[in-house]
Length: 360
Image 1 (cartoon, one colour):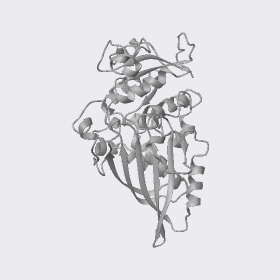
Image 2: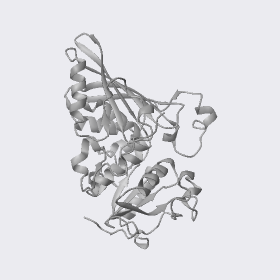
Image 3: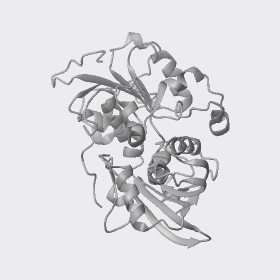
Image 4: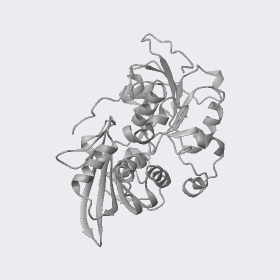
């Protein structure tokens, strides 16, 4: 149900606001929303560049819109109403803003980890804080569109998944749905520097990052528990994830390689069929036919490439590698959030997302 009718020259039916609009995720949200055929971008909020036009923080948007960055409001009722709000904020800030938004009638899409986990006890372990609003956790739908598509249609509140989580979940989803994902799963996933945010740090500064590859947060990454929760709900059993993230010398993209054991009789043809079956009808997931998934094929797009590769057989089991690639700022961030928004508003899920990205 529409809460507010967008009033603008283009006659769009809905309107939106973005909180945290000066970061890299915010940049991709603004770019996509400004070109959306049914959603009018009404407000942009940030902690910096206040009063300045969008191009002050996002040079690719210079001259495209008359919007200016506004401070995050203390009282949502004091600003122009919108149908949907995107929160591209740190999780602790999202908690505070969500508390003010709940009850206003607007739909919320939170892009942080604030509401992704069902078990509140995991927040202390992986986020280092006690969750302050555990009563809201059941109200947020986990926004993994290929898994929760039906629940996202008409949803009020959505927790958009993490970038690593999306890549790894989609890579292993066919095995979970086939009922053969069980026990220990080993994962190594490489990501581009944009995933670390727009603030320069010693580990993300370009002269250091450009010629370097390093691991970080091995076995403790905050996306690990949401991956286990999602794959268990999809059919995985007694899962234990051993996940090592790798910082790679590229700006965008994630390539995840996961290793699991399946019965020895499983063939490559079966694996291909499981991928095709798991994502039948999914608009943005594809299995490459003549190559393996790669970052350059999906950069700038909302597409995901997934493949299962049969490995050697040993002691009655076969090793399978699940390889997946996506753009961490699009399908791993803003693109999936907009896909969620489209479903929440009853729109075609591909609106604003159909472009194939750039090559090379």
